View 1 (tube, rainbow, N blue to C red):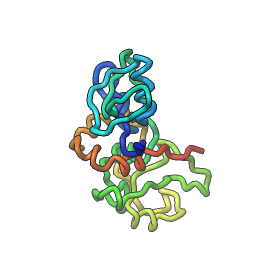
View 2: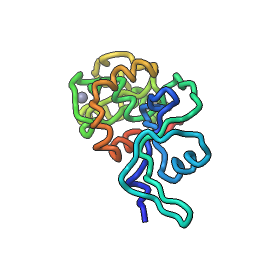
View 3: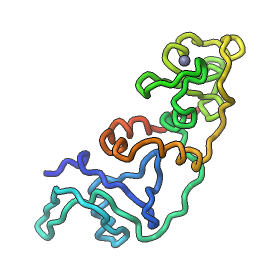
View 4: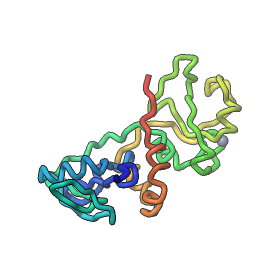
Length: 186
Ligand SMILES: [Zn+2]
């Protein structure tokens, strides 16, 4: 039996670019095989694993491309990873660069004081600054923001994402998906 978690398919648009980068567009092997049978996708690459049924046997697609082009959505999803990417993985309070595991995000206006989770109120922060700022508002925290946070364009994020070698995405696919979880909005 095939473990679907081990064989996700990367979904490319009809122009062979990923449908989206952050989150990366991937489908389960079941969805991708269904799409193959519905003649909606081309198989670009395959895993070595086969899927068997009484009536057919085929290799599981690892990369598929849509037959019909889907126009890109220009609004980037509000995710943890995209906040880090927008801020270049730099803590906006102490202005130092960190690894993703040392980073968290911080609300300029604390949630306890009615601050919302959006592009304008959430910034990348190291754990230390996050702890130091605590429940204080920016004005009372003594910190100077590196830059005013705003919604990035999909294009600017894509440019920044080029700093990631492509094998980074594949090797740590699972971690990557974790960082892609949509931040809770309120
Ligand atoms: Zn910091």
